[in-house]
Length: 261
Image 1: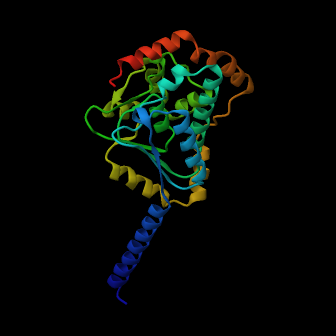
Image 2 (image 1 turned 60 degrees about the vertical axis):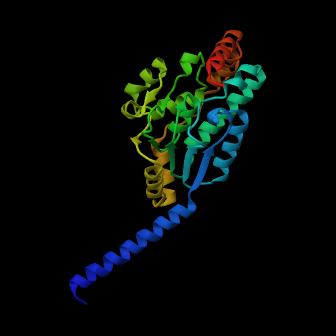
Image 3 (image 1 turned 90 degrees about the horizontal axis):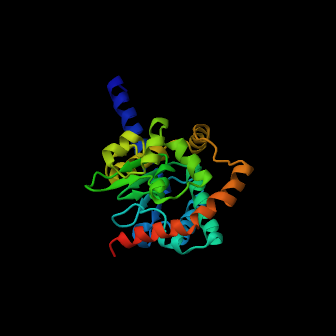
């Protein structure tokens, strides 16, 4: 066998192996579709359903996106405005569990930000390993909780602090603005601007890595979301009541009244 033929034959075999690996990666990927009323806003029902899907996925690669023309319009403000303190405790508990489950998912996760990702929608994006945002005109993303008068639950804040680069974190939280894709990349809210095919290609590439090595590396580079007991008590006793306060309810109702029907 000539050297030239050997090189050609080896290259052909490597290409075939890469093709098999890609097909296998695609077959193992699971889609987490944020789907619900209010542009996929995070209601208790949607969060509970999504949490179950993430947990049932094991260590499978996850492709996270939104139904229709939005990724996720944030927390369901109608539910928050109508809930009492006990219901809000349950609501925020599910949110915290979902954030932790997606953030700590051992397999690769890619968010395809196909439309607006506002407040809680941005939080869902930040949980993912890679975040690809559409270049479609008018689409924005941001952490605007402060503008609404909402305080971050502790695990959710820890996740944001870990995923948003330090120089950008204070600006993103305190400005509470919504940003178009180019500025979102500069701030570190998303990684790249692209299309759905780009997001799927990135997940396929990550999914070809040995699963145990990927999970171990991910654990090593991610900060813990563990909350000290005293801080958790403070959240329950001091923060949750602010979500149920009449002045916050009034502010949320004003925001809802401004939304197009």
